Image (tube, rainbow, N blue to C red):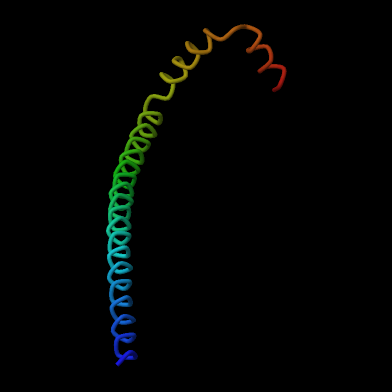
Length: 94
């Protein structure tokens, strides 16, 4: 009879521990699924933004082919704001 009580106590403790471990694993699985969902949405957003950047670069390339001299004047204008010592260093390096 004592052996039967020991077996019942063993199965009761085993059942409780399996339930606790299962609940813990379900909680961990829930958070892993949420993290994977966030990663998926971020990846989708990167893909969309990457496609937009590629489109913008193609448009910029087309504009440069059509009117490249306009950008040349713009860069000259920006270069005029640089101090003269920087310009001399750049010429010396060439």
